[in-house]
Length: 414
Image (cartoon, rainbow, N blue to C red):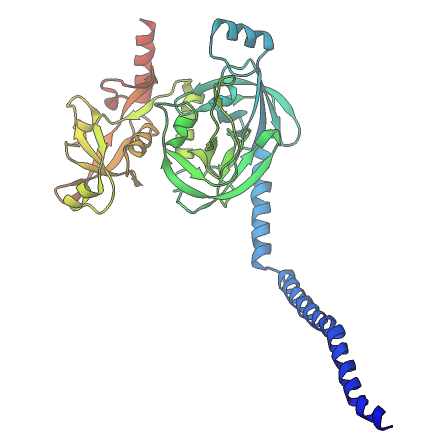
């Protein structure tokens, strides 16, 4: 009995120790699981509350999709293999036998907008609407300088033109949504923000060495097949047209274009340019661009500081006396800082802003002169784009658009 009594406490301690070793982890695991389960249920309860912020976002995104998709189209552009081979033999530039892209309904008259590079050079163009209808389309006209094309489908009822954010400012940081057919996956939607404005990089990527350079940059996912699709804002209004993506792909000799996947840098043509070009193509199949007529250069930070200017602008290095700018009162050493309320920090932005305006438009131009802002009214002239550059039509700032068109027709007939 003495021996048993002496060993009992030690045995009890051993048993308790072993119990702790065996059961404590399970107990702690059970406590942790209970806490995690409570956390999950509290989170789920919050998410299930009506009118939660995420639910509101979901509903908004769903509404954007529902309002936009009926006006988006999938485009199949085709060229016969025979024609493709013939052009390869003769060395003529020719796109691949088939390509896909996107577009959107511009008006109830059957006009569809897309990129010029999607349809240029192809023999047959088919447009598929969101409801599954497929129609053949004709090319009304295209403008290679801005990569804009206008198609038309006939005898189609029940079209749903997209709303447009005409004259609404686009700001860096705005949420945007890109629609199209990435890799041929029709009627897709992606979300992002406006990452930058006035970008000129896309022109090089698209082979537009001297073309349009005032692109909207976005991180909304774009891939081959998104070209020509609409870029819309949080109200479901078109603010631009998808045009190009940035990646490390090299030029494709077969298609005379670029291929590759999204790297989070996409470019879209602003609506202001789209409307200016499209309306002219529909009206007359002739695209004229606003023209100011100044020699310009970018300002450095040091130069801006030396003249008391606290923002970037474009310095006027020369004003020929036979150009619209001279008649408007613009002079050498003026720094153009704004046109119609749009800032002009660089020469590409200024050039694109002016060329997007219709001829005969009176632009309100703010310049920095002698330490103060001077506002000038500048009736714009007209210029045609051909031979890789803009060519001024003398005296066009004093003509109506119709008079300008008549003068061009007369010259072409000579």
